Image 1 (tube, rainbow, N blue to C red):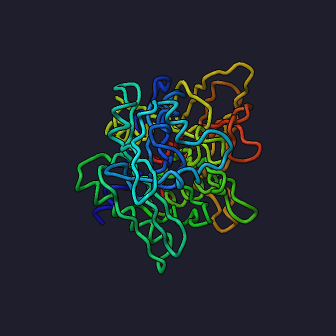
Image 2 (cartoon, one colour):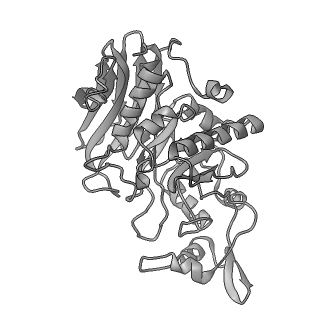
Length: 412
């Protein structure tokens, strides 16, 4: 299949050693929402929030829409979305940008506001080399009445969502990714699509993610409190899904593993619960613009974080060595778990051996030589510092490093 050949990678190609200095990488969030869909603040206010807090780029991924053309909202509808006590979105925007900033219009007897487009936000807030607004869409598909949401980055038109109540979520996931790939081929643009919150409404399983070869990226962390990040007594959490899916993909299907994103999925910005600042990616791009950012992520030059920062990632496949240099924080202890699956895992015994913790190392430098029979190895760094804006009880700051070693792994 032509599309499959473009999106899957050979497991036999050699991988050169990588010595990545991550200190100057760009920090960005690829999943957030505004009044253009189901968020409760103006896009310029959301972009400004991220810019003022040191982010380098943001993708405003409203549902099935880009911030272009004209969108008018009446004031009553805008104010109904603010659930916290205090200044509403209109007052806050006028305080930040001035009384004449908002374009007020009365239509059909109702006073309202014409929302700013991405182009208008860019003119007001972008600065070359310092802050970039990444075009994005949350393609809100559904299969069997279950959500199959995919964020598409660096696009220039809306890709129509696939909604099919008679199809399985797995089938809709595949059809959606094929549609995205067809758009990529037509546009000639570097495009990245990451699956969002697989446990939201328990829509997708690890086996679904494994068997859709066209998928290569997913959210290992999503900051929305309602997406079942940790799973439950009978279902795996997002990180366990990652290991199950990658084991099946590499050992049984010959597919490349999934790469993990961390995102906010923020919808509310006035003190409510679905708030920004919870998860992001750090990207090793050559410059701060859409094509370069996506090209770097497609090459795997990124890691996911909820607060832990890295100074370096070093991988030597010849020595089977993975080293992390973690940015020190006074009074904070870091623990790095090196995780993977061995070739001889027992798939029949309730997934015994899948996602094995090979080693746990404390400190700001963690080096691990992974086993010869490892199908892959990845790393999760966990801090002793509590997350300042947790999405679940007891959350600590973490970082997730993408799987390595799988290019040399033999098929099971």
